[in-house]
Length: 296
Image (cartoon, rainbow, N blue to C red; front, side, top):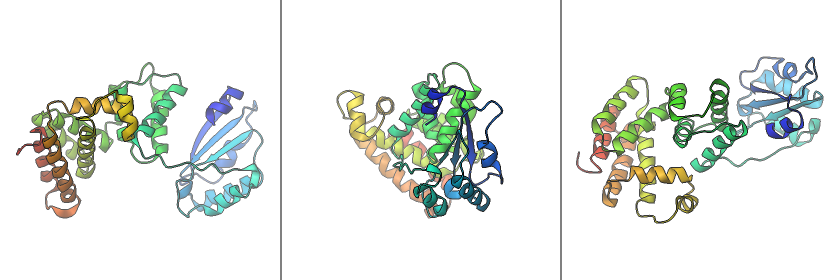
């Protein structure tokens, strides 16, 4: 939508609005014609969490939309906001519904983020893309906002160090740093990173999840032959993820990966309530993985 409207008029004004926190009058103000009459695109996220005030204002707006303004309502599912959705589905204000399948695969999330940078004419390093996608596994709108922040606040190529600088506090980012060190057999470094992450408030659950995900990716590629693109399409992954999994799997044997995957599953149960000390459970897993699935 942004690209289409921007191609029609480069002076397009793009604004993001959160339906859950928007103040009364925000939508009408943003949609009002500007002094020079530039077209406006208002992207409203979190409609599934909308406030009562926003609901009432939006219902009034769709009955009489502003000229030159395009409003995109993003609804992630659920019954909240149904009255507004029904109004749009009914054609109020010329509105239409565009169903969007939920993006679940990392390959699709990676392609989405890559597209954000490409549209802005910016290059992003594969490592930076991996860290960014890993850091925003939840709401796709959050991933989009993170991409736009990097585009707006930086110049030149987007590198892994750039992403780490901006989003080092994301739990998933910390989790993958621990995983990378452990899988490479650097037990000491992995344990130091683990302790730093936990001391910074990271939850053991996403750390275990990151380790398990990487192990599963390694299992898929360890004995796979052929180009990364073909293997990626078979497993719903991006080619760079295949290349990374192959590097992670260097020095591993199939049996060791199998044992580590089982250990990770058991640790997942422990950190979710089956163990008295979740942090110790993660430390045991990190040591086990750093020993290539041995008895560490």
